[in-house]
Image 1 (cartoon, one colour):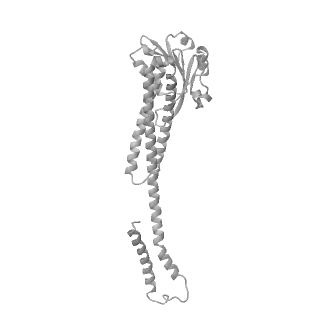
Image 2 (cartoon, rainbow, N blue to C red; image 1 turned 180 degrees about the vertical axis):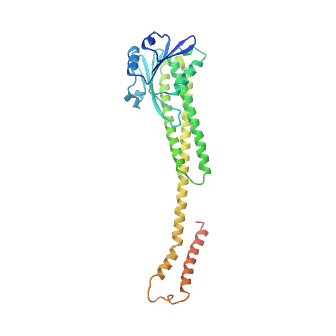
Length: 317
């Protein structure tokens, strides 16, 4: 699917899946968005606009050269975007800036692009919309707002987990799984935000882009730095909660071990006494004594009570 966006009469116009012939006749085009395009559509755009999208292998690479590439005619960027669903998923999006045109290439739908279109249509200044860089920065700003919402959602879950950890009497495995899942989400967020920071920092170093959108680029960098601080704080808080959970687990395990240790020690003297009287020697003074049996039982109980009293005095119980 191809979506073409043009600027006209101070507003953004959208053409959904136009024919190749129609694309060639459109004027003031600022953005061509390729969503899960066919091979024919991809080849047409690459051939007619003399660009080349990242290959699937290049999309998987993490080197800076594979994420940001500046040539004499184009600026090519590969960014990872997170979906705002319950379970975060990463999707790679290719951006190519050539002259005043922005080309985007992605597989599958991302709500962030629909939100970007709404923002572009609601803008009051047509002058700012006459170049693809504005569209790209609008996409970034929308995604940054989305990342901020994700961090806020994670912090709300963190507050719930923290309260549950304090309130509940018995520890549950689900709680640790929730903490681990949130840690994974925060790491994904931190990674994608850092990626955006590198790209925007590279754009600032391009004189033409810095001249057109200098203040806007600086604001985006400040917003990204703020998000990185929040994500770092969330990561540290999650680590603290995980350590607290594991500490409580250790305390719980130590209590169990302590109980078994006390029971073992308390029953050692009675076991010793019972073993002595169970030796079945022919000559033992107490064998023919009428009070021998109650004496042995009493001796075992007394020895247990002595140890229990000693443990309690030492405050081991």
